[in-house]
Length: 346
Image 1 (cartoon, helix red, strand yellow):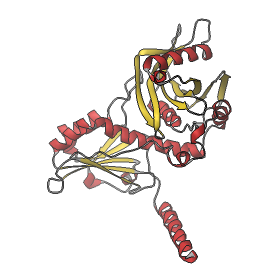
Image 2 (cartoon, helix red, strand yellow):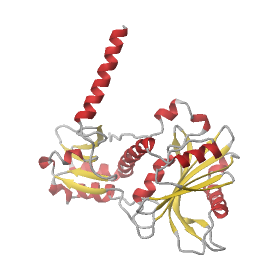
Image 3 (cartoon, rainbow, N blue to C red):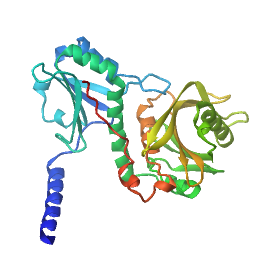
Image 4 (spheres, rainbow, N blue to C red):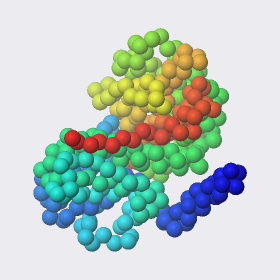
């Protein structure tokens, strides 16, 4: 039995190592998507639905319009070995003999390691167009979560030790933050860290306040707490300058992180009596060991620059926060990833 078990382990190890050795790494930048679709179809309603309405959906919560993905398209019949390695592929497969309804299927590592290959299967162009329009947010979220999970894996290997130490010291939490973050300011149940990613300044902060019940998670309370904390801890260069939330462009919604309730806020911040501003995203959760709300937030300052990649990398970091009750559990090992689902139209 011992020998058989050892052989099984060696076989699994050998298979894994062989796959990694044979398969090249996926190519392309984060949020690049290759669409495999007949060229003629791209200009018809189904192609416009997939590219214009889905993959070019504007990123929420940023001041200038940016597409969710950078899209290129190619004819499936002329796909070469280089394009096969693209990190995110969306292939269109229309076949009335094989399919009775539209659905989304995906395969990981089809031609390259760390690749996601999504196939949209449908009996007709009209059916697929309707599917894309109905489930456009789902398709975008699926691909965004895939990219964020890649970023989480990267941060497990390279992250800011300074942010990890501050999180542990002040809140007994763990977090993985981009390694470029190297400056900090510490306050009362608060820290603010920042770093330069070349395309702009990224900032990550954490703060806490007492949990008083369900009323702790409504838009008014969350934004009031945010403005109060930021006013005190993030002043401007001159008296009368401080950070505020642009409440006209703020979206708040309940969500789930590691299987537990969380409250997501995304929108715009600005400096009162100054010209600075940009996007932010935050996640608020309850630390049951201390009966406190823990808020982790990322915000970006990149005047005139593109902000999508910056804010999404910070958002991925927020999903790595582990509260005291979660550390050392299976949640920490397996559930730091953003959950992905499939959608089958029946």
